[in-house]
Length: 200
Length: 200
Figure 1 (cartoon, each protein chain N blue to C red):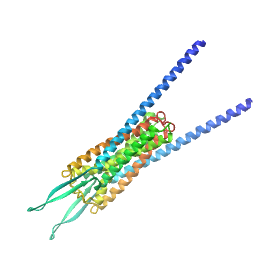
Figure 2: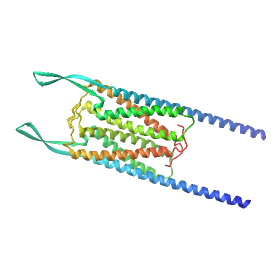
Figure 3: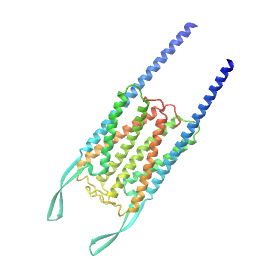
Figure 4: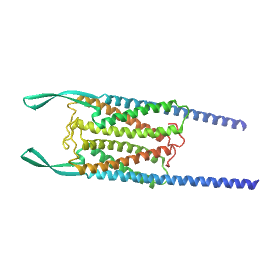
């Protein structure tokens, strides 16, 4: 009887140890996933900010004042000419700086600070708001640049500034991917910490 | 000694009962706060969508073809002329419909479903992304309408369509408040369910 008890105690200990190891392995996998997502968010928003921040094009355009007097005019497109693009570059710069800092704090700090974790949940969600807002603004102006609008008589400009528009479109695409990664990070933290609670 | 034990057991029971009551009272307060926030989010996005959805202005503008031939032209501004405004109205319509449904499901369902609660966390965060994106787009085009931009030769139109612009600005302001309430709701759920966990 005593031996039986000892065997069953040993089995219990073994099960507990396996459970503990599985839990730690799960935590390691989750941390690796999070690190990967944060690195991706950093890379995407960093490249988007740089690509748009160095985006400019200068072109010589022939202008006909009278049929006999053609005139060459130099025109430029720069990202800081439009406030929506300034907001876009600023929001991506803030998001990539935050992504770098969050990697630094989450993966180099010793122990697990609950306050730090809460701060990261708040800031992840704020980055979602900031990036989606910046992307929405840049996308609206970029679409206007591509297509124009006859009702307000705003002409499309991308047939003149093709290179500027293409580079801008790539940057907006990358930033949109970056904002989706931040959305995923915000949802990961909110859902993983909510395994049993269903009350606010 | 036995009496002393009984007294101490009685005190423990009393303390546990007080603790339970306090927990229930806290849950009730949190639920009331959540209901209030959801009602506010619904009202703000609903009014924003309606205000912009009925927004139009028609005006007769004098156009000088030659100094001796003035011509009166009828011009119109309608919200669906610009894709950014269509996106704005659609995002607010989706957000207010979701707010109404979330009130219905959260406050009429019997018992506490964990899956429902997770769904609501996901959808709250998606609404933050949707609304901030819609507001960013509408704000960028609205600002262009107010100020214009000499670099791309897009002229301001709000001196002609003053009423349309003012009504649009109020709607965008209300929608921005609505998006802040959704942000608050998403943070409330993420943080309240994360009281001790600090691992993904």
